[in-house]
Amino acid sequence: PGMPASTSTTLSSQRGDWRRRARAARAGAEPAAATTPAAALAAANVAPTVPACAASPLCVHERGPSREWWGDDRSLEARLPQLLKEGRAEVARTLLLSKAEPAHGVTLFYLGVCAGILEGEAAAVDPYEASIAAMPGLGIAYGNLVRAYLARQRTGDLERALVLAKTLASSQPEAAEPQYVVGVVLMQLRRFSDAAGAYEATLRLDAAHHGAHVNGVHCLQQLPPDDEVARRRLEAVARGGVAAGLWANWMQRPPHLVKRLTSRPWWDKGEFAWCALLEEQYPQIRDEVLRLRRKPASFTPVGGRAAHDP
Image 1 (cartoon, rainbow, N blue to C red):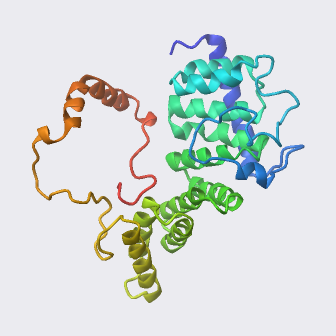
Image 2: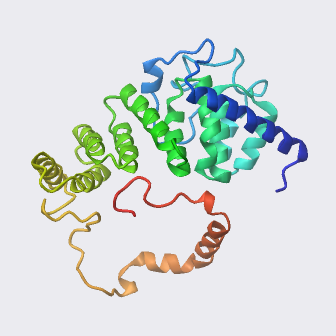
């Protein structure tokens, strides 16, 4: 709504191009003059959704087309991240479609970020696929694309997400979070023993990783009760949770534990200063919930990453 007709037409054409590129990527087509240097993937940060700039280590080795992604307007390099941080994704997308190099991997990546903000993460699958087809070393796109497939979950999406997650994890063998993401996808596929293995790998790199402890014991509990190997693995993960300060006893493993919090059913709101803040902000909270009910695709469902959020 409110988008100029010319921009809307351009966007429709661009989406068709994204899909063609995405199909080629899923079919294993290799874009011309593109490689996948491990150093570029290793420099990627899986968590952020916006790269600092096109000159980040993610993009040093693979520029895609000969022109820079911003075309003739270098100010886009600083403006795009700022617009997205401010939540002005519609403005950012209009600038990308009118000024940036349309086939460049960074442009396609930013269009994926915009799609995720405006239409929900599932809508970002095609532009992210096109992004890594054009620039296979853009590691940040792999993590975002995994989340997009987890949100969409059409037939074959989880299998594709697993390939992407393993690619990112293998390129960053010393980083815990990519290993955790592999576990998340395997858990969604109900491959519980393999998922637990990914969480155990996460904990070897980060012994205090909360999600890996919680999801790890959840997956191991799904295995047959007479599986002695699984029983020993469960105990090891649970005892690691105690050592990390997550639990007080390895045999009692609540997903959420606030130490020294008295167990009682009702509390006086005066004991918590943040209750007054919530009451003050009630109109904004109500309006946000109503917006989400009108546009549920823009809300990421709880439970995509952790066993304790069904």
